[in-house]
Length: 264
Ligand code: 23J
Ligand code: MN
Image (cartoon, rainbow, N blue to C red; front, side, top):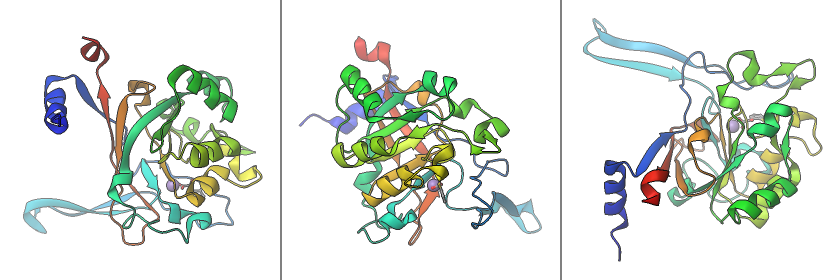
């Protein structure tokens, strides 16, 4: 058999495969999701120094970190949602590691999201994408590119009196991807995998309910999706092995073929 891993190492070394970081910085300034005030809120990130080459530890520096599981670039496990609570292997410590990586399909909805912050991917939109790029394969990460990661401050949550306005998936699109395409899950550049207005949808926040009910995952607050081709890259998204964890901040990496090099 071909030495796939040897070839991969050589390709990365030689620059024909690039490692792209899809992760935003994690710190006190990282924005967290705002839920209606009747629900418990997720805390922001706090980082407290344990020691820094000082009297508390003369030769070492380390911190204590505290945050909600769903903070910054993070992974949503099926157990996060009530629809997935009784599924097997549904938590961060029990999901098989094979499920953490797969081919990426990048849905570029940059134009649509710029024109309408409440834009939703529909089955028809996916059909048009598939007619150009081929069918979304089983076990794929579907990544919704909106360039939302370029926004900062209040423009990221983009809230007004009606709540946040950020793009996402129509319930029928989530069902198509989860059930008919059998994807690993969906990833987005926004703060959560549901659209900003999805708290007003019927059913409520449908992407969470449908994806997690089908044993699928979510990735939120991704960046650098503009550096990925529509197909052909591989995404690795392995959450912390938190016991009974509903998700976790993580480092998401993409292995991306360099176009010029590949075409040679
Ligand atoms: C908790 C409650 C509602 C939602 C969320 C978390 C997320 O979006 C999340 O980070 O999973 S909608
Ligand atoms: Mn989450």
